[in-house]
Length: 187
Length: 187
DNA sequence: CGCCCTGTCCGTACTAGTCGGTACAGTCTC
DNA sequence: GAGACTGTACCGACTAGTACGGACAGGGCG
Image (cartoon, rainbow over all chains, first blue to last red; front, side, top):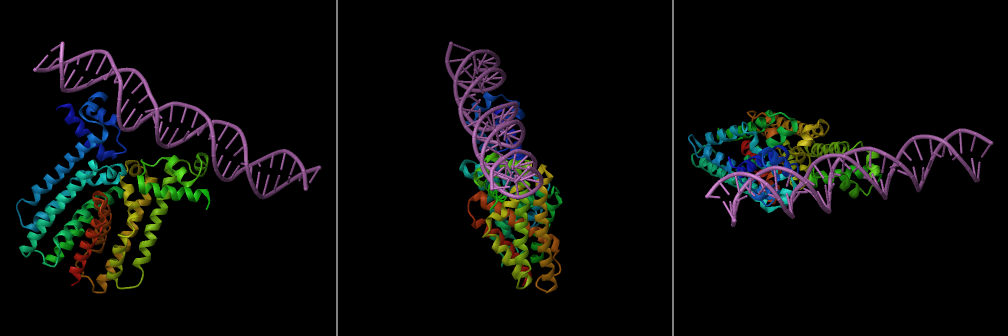
């Protein structure tokens, strides 16, 4: 694997582990097995490399979600499968995690990919919810846009709770609660 | 106001604005109008002061929530009021915000007050939900514990979304979606 | 009363270490 | 040999923290 690729991957990992301000260029170079010069050859600086890493992480999240949501099964089944699967991919919160660093929020280059990833996922959720309504699986009183935003928020909030308690079960609890609300409406 | 108090308040503000790793003791002292020596006189160090600030923030959040949830109105009305009110208190996410710093998560002294605040709020939500079920406002098919976790997650996730997009309306959207699901079940 | 002593409180000046970044010379490939 | 690439050495700024000395009260004593 070439150095540039290794740098991006190392940055992805470190953004998840330590956040943006907590990650030094030195640490990235060390993990990537690269020297000081090579990083500044491939990227203009820390922010530039972080932007590349965030774009890639966001694309991964979007792609993974799309794969499940456009797959087989009824709309509600696909939604349930995707939400359930998120609990196995705790690293998915890598995206939401970024929104807490003021330096990230202040820099459009860094905030944009995160925001776009959320909008992308939210739109896919909304589409599946609308499908479920059309199929009669959910009542037409729900607003797919609104509920889609709620589901994205539950996943991101679930990560927050799980990190605070150190217990991944708190994530599952929040997601299961949301699914039970949907199932309650379906019945 | 005495210096110690000013230091705690300054730390609360800065934790919210810049996070834990992004906040230097100097910045806290400057904002509090105190000198270097006085901070290290009152507190053993940055982590000690941050722990005091977090405990206070967590207590504020719990107290504010309790006030609304044990107030007047039907259970569902109180719940709606509290969730709606959170959107006006965007600084409420000061608590959830902390869970993103690895240094905070690693230090029990810092993580504990955050975790306890969440558990406190979740328990109050669960109590009100159980009340609503008992009053016939919600079907007894819902699990108050589970749904309470979902509501806390929606609020925290809403903050994440709003920060990512820079648009507070995204917070309101997520919360309104959750409320619409509850109302759907009530009907 | 003046006097000193003692502990609390606070500001200045310093430390070693790390931050993000640059300069530059060497190496490797075509 | 030219250009892409990489490693070493350095930079000023900032990090968390310490050392230390001075201001200021209250209290016991002549």
